Length: 82
Image 1 (cartoon, rainbow, N blue to C red):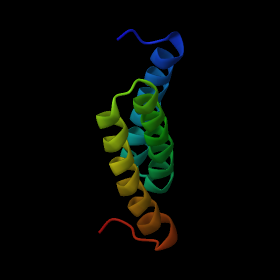
Image 2 (image 1 turned 30 degrees about the vertical axis):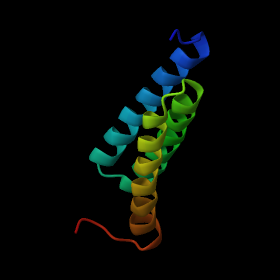
Image 3 (image 1 turned 180 degrees about the horizontal axis):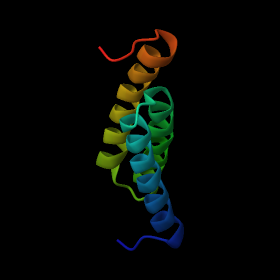
Image 4 (image 1 turned 90 degrees about the vertical axis):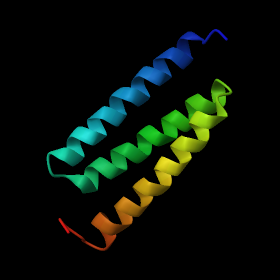
């Protein structure tokens, strides 16, 4: 299946944002990192839907659920380092 130019760009943008989210979290800002990762997961879910790769879509939604838990713990409950 040939991907459109938009789909290729969407995949690259989602990947870059996901890596940036990991970096932000790794340098000590998990509150921001989880939010950025949630955005990347939404882009991956969109990519999976558009390319009919439903496994990617489902796995990105599962990752999004993990990121929501992280946001709740770090932003709303104020849990830090253990």
